[in-house]
Amino acid sequence: MEGRKAKLIRSLRFRLCVILAIVGILCTASNSFRSYHRSVAGVNAFVDEELSSIASVIVNYDVILPKSWDPSGAFRRRHHSFDDLLNHMFGPRSGFLDRPFLPVPSLNDLYDKHQDIIIAPLYPKEGEVFYFEAGSQDGFYNVRTKDKMVRAFVATNRAGIRFVVARPSELIDLMIRRLMMISIVDFIVLTLIFLPCVIIAVHILFIPVRKLARELDERKGSDLTPIAADALPSEMDVFTDSINTLFRRTSDAINRERRFIADAAHEMRTPLTAISLQAQSLDESKLPASEAEKVADLKTAIARQRTLTNDLLNYARLQCGAYKKNISEFYIKDLFIEILEDLGSVADDREIDLGLKDNCDGIIVKTDRNALKTVVSNLVSNALKYTKKGGICDISALKENDRVVIRVEDTGPGIKEDELDSVFNAFYRVGGDTSNIEGTGLGLSIVKSTCDAIDAQIVLSNRSEGGLRAQITI
Image (cartoon, rainbow, N blue to C red; front, top):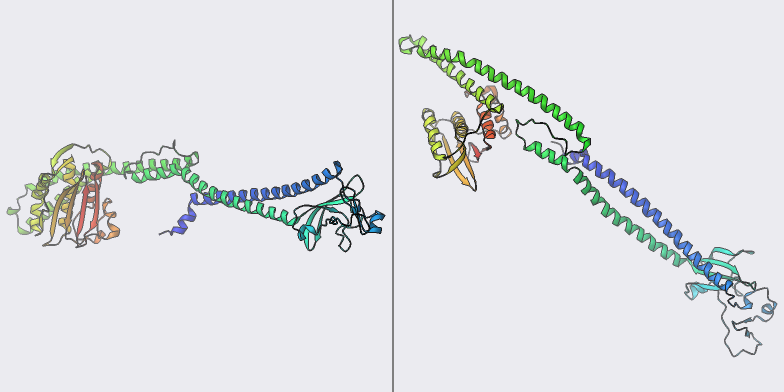
């Protein structure tokens, strides 16, 4: 039997889900990657715009910068002093020594004083490192201060004082990391949404295919009507056309076989009737013992051949759909009594206890009486054939809601589990050709076809205590 894993790998639905899932994940990952890079570029552009805008405000609006920020001023070199924003000069000899010195900002303040943005002179204070190359032009720079990166914009105001507007790169990196996390979360969320959607969509697309499979499973064996392709995807037209062609060929072959069986059985009936009449006219008591024995064997062979002919005609009639139901209501116990009277002598000859089990008084069945009698009679006859001398064969019926369940049980050898379904095939006999039980192999085929004709279900099963149980549900 094919393993579950191998069956899953062969599944077209599984392959389609995998392909769509891979394509969707790749597209989602690509979009998330591009979105992340666009966001990073946007953050960098925003930071650069912010720094250049601050510098533009200082330049365009003539924001006062200390003259001491200009290293070319001799005053600063000589007195090591600078002016504040109100042009008050500070220095060791100024008249404002009682006021505190205004601190000169530096790029180092970004980390030393944990500032987000700083405006500082381009040239550092004495003792500090100059972080820009000599002759640096106005524009954007990435510089390293104290082993940490800084994004800076160099500008020159109208007074010729050069200054720097800077922001720590750590803040930029933090925003970028947040954007990365957002992109990853978006990717995971979109994937978790996309995969179930793919599975559900594929499941919905294959509903017509599964519906067709269920309809084919529920069909009777004789139903070979073409499949209607209107409700199926157009991609399955080739498949349905092939199945319908196969149905037509099979139907033609079966019809030819049924016609042959019916014609053959009909042609055999006429000579068999004549032979039977001739054989019955022979009086065995007036013949020598050896001749009488031959005549008795002849009559037995003729009876068996007549039974086979009748079985063939009944089987062909059922298979051709020529059987017409005659529905009526009747008490099931009355039917059972008729069957017991018909087969009681056979049971007595075999010394088998044939009778009714449980109380079935008052149970009414609405179906074709003759057809049901044929079914139960065949099952009882089979049970009597295979049950050994001294065995038991019981018939019972019970009411279950709106259904009637009929059971024929025996104490015979039962049937192998792998043959329980095969016994309904025409000419199939338990034990094959080696079976020493007389029969045509058509009895259970007729039973199954008759049950199908009257919309009844039959199930065969082995009893735990031994023997076979045949259950008919009407």
